[in-house]
Picture (cartoon, rainbow, N blue to C red):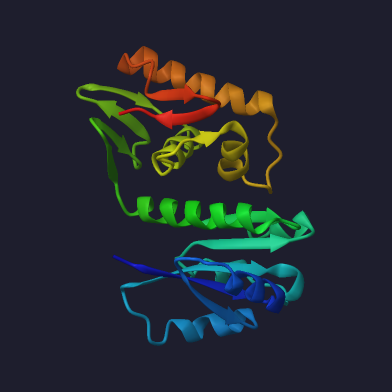
Length: 218
């Protein structure tokens, strides 16, 4: 089992704030992007990292260098234009516009770790269901349905939310703050996903709504 560390890069203030929180992770601080390589000199396979890059305080980062970091990365900036180049073919990356409160950032960190773990699992068992991430399908016995990338993200997200998630949580965490998503877009995705599962897999309760929260029932 990997032990994850949160690594802040480029912000003393955020490092101090995160250090004051009661988290289940180790907290490390790096002053610049160049210091990232120092972490990997004594790398242990049991170690995992989530990098928080505060772009407003860093020199311009080359996308080619960022791609070499095969761990979850969260890029933060007050100006979304700083994300444009880094968004190109960048695995395990989330882009968040500042300001952001710590509670929301913590949820993004946990979701990033969850998606990172799932990335290396070709097939994920969800009760009697099989989520095939390579084929992007959800199967139940011999029946299966194709999924869009966002539909798969929603299932992965809800699978990690045993206590359920509200509409607001899903909109924030699955689409993230860097993407503009309105209620109509969200509801359309959820409706189509539930219809697929009901039509193809004959299960109208796989995604269940209780007291304003969404759950996976399996």
